[in-house]
Length: 110
Length: 114
Image: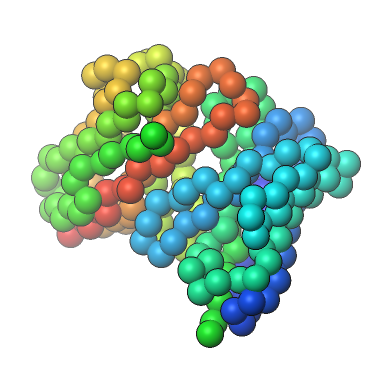
């Protein structure tokens, strides 16, 4: 079983749609959780951290369920510019290392 | 300011060449990383430097040689690479010791080995 699992997609959605991505992680001791966005041929960029109480940043909402070891990202009112690969990232322990999911590709169409 | 810079942006090298990739950050981060990323795959950790000392080497072949001259700079020396080493090489940095902090990536060097 992979340490961090994501549906690879692609998710093809029309502009204005709401889309949700899910991610599961295997290490119950994992400490921190993040969503990164990666555009084609670019570097991963931090989209948002994920907090236990859930958090929102504009059109983006992240949720964490520690009991189920499950993380989600909800994007409302999708824009063409949201087209990218979304990486679920977990810090498994107290050290520096991050574990990356395989990424979920989103394509928003006019 | 969360900027990490990398040079060069693109590099083409033959299997007998020696080249170096460079990375710089001025965020006061004391942890720096090299990753390799192939197309449609997530980044794969190669090396971690903590307080300018190599702390993790993920069983990377010796044809890749990292160097951390000071707290802001990280180099990756390349020698006798293989075509399968062609990939995007990403540098990242982070604060040390705070689990809430994450890593910030540079734009990467796209390497082609012929």
